[in-house]
Image (cartoon, rainbow over all chains, first blue to last red):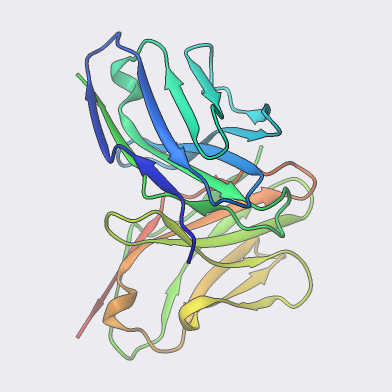
Length: 115
Length: 114
């Protein structure tokens, strides 16, 4: 069964450093998402991406965040200057098309620790 | 704004007994409702969804959920729990016509014991 994959599984970085989290969505999927979960809190939507453009973003997704599909398979989340409060589990997801009829498939997550 | 509440942090049930994991929602208009499960070191796996139609929705691994509009609930159920069902369960909502954003609850840890 096809899966969404994410690398690395755990990233430790110092405050102020840039990080790039990588995801490989399912190959025939067209919509891509990032969510995050701060320890002990809810899974929160960050951004959705379609046709090389952001289609929706949350208030969390400020100028420090960016997303990119640099090639035909990868989807990345960049945090320009990390803060302590960015420490969280980051989940990538993809769906075949838009709308609730098309389930979002999630990757295993990247645990980001900012020290 | 849409929101989901999962009132129980943990549910314990004996193997073979029925289980219920509770979820209530708040959304403008008609909701799309989902259940996901997370096993250790794995991503969120889709279990089932309610879009429209029959209020009782059947999903993977013998799970089902009942949509109750008057109580704004979407409780997850299984007639006979297995130890392998032990995992973290998330309820999520997406508003009809409101894009693809999923709003999740805080999750409920299900523990099934022998």
